[in-house]
Image (tube, rainbow, N blue to C red):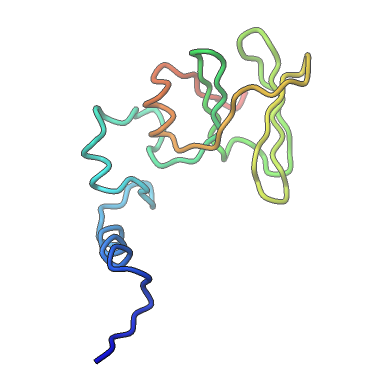
Length: 130
C-alpha cells in the first residue's frame, strides 16, 4: 500500500501542525515554541514582537524602523547620530535601502522582526515617524 501526501517530509508535516496550533500573537507569530524556550529573556514590549522592520547598525548603535512607517515607493530623511540617513523603499518589492546623505555610503542594514533586532540591540532607538 502506498500512501500519497502533499508534504515533502515527515518533519514538514509535524512542524506544520505545530505552527497551525500555536498561540497567535499580533495575528501571526513566527516564533516557533521550541525557539521561544531558548530565548534568554522577554521580548522588548515597545513594539509587537513579530512586527517586520528595517534595522540600521552603526558600531554598537542600532535604530529600528517599523516597515509600516516607511512609505512603499517613497523616501524619508532621518537625523541620527548627527547625520542624515536617507531611506528609500522600492515600489516594486517593498524592500528599503538606506544611504547617508553626506557621502552616499550605505550603513549596515537588514530586514528583521522586532524580537530579533531588540534582542541584539536592546537599547536601540525606534523611529517615531518624525
